[in-house]
Image (cartoon, rainbow, N blue to C red; front, side, top):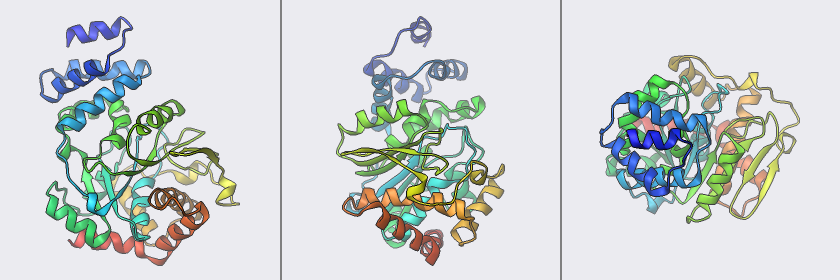
Length: 329
């Protein structure tokens, strides 16, 4: 690691193969926490490159425990996090709304690192038991419409660095990788990213893969459709700005999207929104993100039609029933 750190501290970049190899060694536990911390910090001091990002992704792909869910052709809704906006768990809620609308979802998630509560914290608090057993996960997605893929159970490399990430307490390049390394390799992805630069990276990487994608970034920094300002949306065939007025005439403030500080509070808020007790702002943001996921699954549908399906899923209680069914399996 000393040679790698000297290389990086001298303002040199890693090649794709170098990035792959150093992460492989980290995942093997060959370096101490101080060395790993120093390595992760480098990429907070400068922008990561596409080659470095792809090299890290290659390593995680090779090392992960894969699960074949292709028979369900699921979509994943996953954000990078790291936007520092302290929102409630929008993408997780949108996942249940998407499943409630009749589309299969393979949700990739993890504990919160740079935020107080990640999707795994919510699911665990609700009583969901993480698993990497294919038969059980297939039964869950087949019966309820969704299954949850807890990252540390599928990615030994992520598990190895989890204590270091928690100690650092800020986003790292692992946040950037999260949506790219769903162990079921879904062909449909609704991805939220925290910067326009990373959005471009994702487009470059995904256009070389067989994926139907929607990559979103709100222009005021959110890694999701926030409706607080315009959202840049990049798909396989077009790029455009989704305006809040395309969805609602009522202004949405950043304050209206704040989450709770504790896991218990976050989970209560999560469940209240699924129960139909969310505010207009909360419901609008959740259904807007779910609508883009539905459009990933059904590209022929226009956005207003997808939005109507998302609203019906939430308002009818079908999204809540997806959660209840999942927890009962």
